[in-house]
Length: 248
Length: 248
DNA sequence: ATAATAAATCAAATACAATCAATATAACTT
DNA sequence: AAGTTATATTGATTGTATTTGATTTATTAT
Image 1 (cartoon, protein in one colour):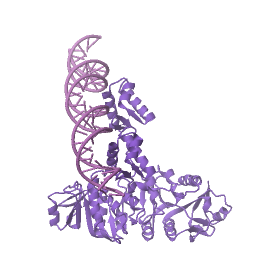
Image 2 (cartoon, protein in one colour):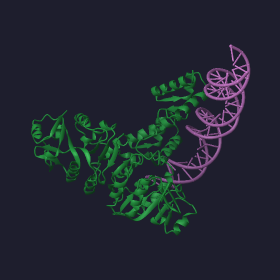
Image 3 (cartoon, helix red, strand yellow):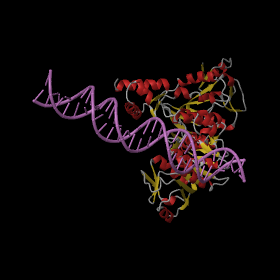
Image 4 (cartoon, chains in turn purple, cyan, yellow, green):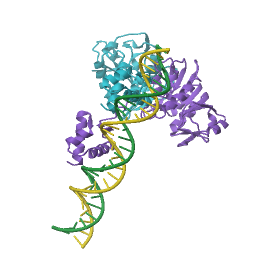
C-alpha cells in the first residue's frame, strides 16, 4: 500500500462519506496515524480536501459564498468600535458615500434605522441595507467579483453626478506621506469619493496606520477626520496636518 | 461531532430559524454550553452571525440574499424553455443587455459558461453570474428594493454609454398595440435598452401575450424577435408587423 | 435584586508537529 | 552484478497545541 493508493482511497472515502477520520483511516489501511496525517496534509496543501482536527472534510464548511469572511475577518471588534463612532456623525436627511472596504461595511449595522441616502459601489452594502430605512443609490460600472464592487471609468464618472455631505472611506494604508491603495481602480474611486463630498471621514483600524502599500494616491490634507483604534504616536503628526482624530 | 460539523449545524439552524439558543444547541448536539458559546463567539468574530445574550441571530448581510425565490415566479418551466432558446442566440464575445424581470433572470443558468459581457440593472442577475465566466457591468442609479434593480434618470443615462448587440427584455404585457409596462420607471429603462442595442429580443411567456397593462411605452416594431411558449392566434398579427417569432 | 448568561481559570484528553531512527527504494560506481 | 551511497518513506518517541469541560467569578437582562 503506497502513497498513491492511499491517496486514492482517502479521496474515495471522502467522496462517499463527505469526511474522513485519522484513526479510522489508519486502522482501515493498517498504517500509522502519523502517515495518514502526512497524507492528509499533503492533500490539503494541494487543495484536494479541507483538514480538520482529527480528520478532513471535502470543503471548508465555513466557506459561505456571500460575505467578507475570507477577507476581512481581522479586527472585527475594532472595526465595529470605529463604525459605532462614525455613525454618530450621521444625521437623518444626510446623503453619504460609502466605499467598498470591509471596515466601512461594518457601518451598515449602525445606520440601518437612519433616514438617509447612501451612495455606494459595494454590493454587500446594498444587500445589508436593502430592507432598511436607508434609501440606496448604486454606482454603476464594471463589476469586480473579488471586491464585489464597481470600479473604473464609468463608475468614477457616475459618481461625479452626485454630491454628498460625507464620504466614509477606507484605505489600504496611511502614513504621514499620504493615503495608499493596492490598485489603481481603488485609488480612482476613492479619489472620486473625496472630490465629491464636503467632508471625508477615514475609517482605519490600527493595522493600517503607518502602512505604506503599493500606490500613494492622495495627501493627508484631503482627509477631514480619521477614526481609529490605533494608539500610534504618529497620530499627532497627522493632526499637525489638519486632520481631526477620533480615537475609540 | 467536531468543530466544523457543529458550526455547519449552527449556521443551518440560524438560516432556518433566524436565531439560535445556547441551551438548545448544547442539548441538540449533546455538548457543553461553554463549547457552544465558544463556537458562537468564533462565528461572530468571523462575521457569520450576531451574538446575543443567550444565543445568536443572523447578521444582516446574510439575511436576504438576492433571489426571486420568495416572489411568485409563475411558469418556471415555460420561462426556462424560452431562455434555453434565447441562449442559442448568444455567442462568445457578445455584449448583451439583460433587464430585471423574472423571465430574463432565468437566462442566467444558460449563459454562465459563455465568454460574454452582460450589462444589467438587476442585482439578482449579478449575484447569479458573479462567479461565472461572464464579465459583468452594472447599471447604476436609484435602487428599487422591491424589484432589486436600478431605475431612473441616472440609470437611463448610464445605459446610454453602452451599446449592445442584443437586449433581452421582458414586459408586463404585449398586444398588437405595442408593449406595456406597470410603471414609468420600468418603461424608461426598457426603452433605453431597446434604443442602445442592435437587436431587441423579447422573452414572454403566454401569460403576457395579449395583455394590455397600465402604460403603453413602445410600438411592436421596436422588437426584432419574440420568444414565447404561447400558441395564441394573435402571434401571426405580430409577425405581420415584422417580428420574428420563435415558439418553444 | 435576582436569576440567567458569560467570561476566566484550570485540568484532562486528544491530536499534532518535530525529531530521530529504521527501512525501502533508487542511483551510481567500480 | 555487487556494493555503496543517496534519497524517500514510514514509524516511534516526545513535547506542544488544540479541544473540551468543570468550577468559580463577573456581567447582563429583566
